[in-house]
Image (cartoon, rainbow, N blue to C red; front, side, top):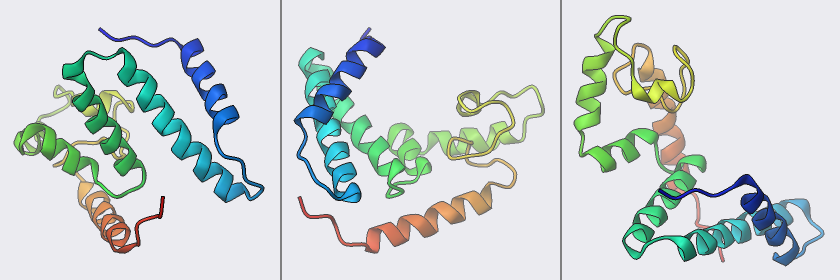
Length: 146
């Protein structure tokens, strides 16, 4: 239903670069750009959304940012969205043979492992343990000051 062109996105990005705070330090500048662009994108997308869709967009954007910063595991998001049904379904699909196609794998390519592989896949225990370790470490870190 909603579509945004690449041209619109690039124009938005260029405007965010021009309008964000300046800094001579690279790390500070990148943080300022990232924060400003994220909020700028949120504002401009929400301007065109129906009122009923704004909360869902805000939730998905926040969840994806948390996953990217390793403060939330993809399995946690899957649980929030499905209420735990996806975990049982993923485990059952993992027992299926070659005929069982997992929707989450389609995004990354068949057979690849990564953050989008289904819970219950063979060898996924190490992946889940790594996510848990990084998530616990991230939760102990101090929140950045804004």
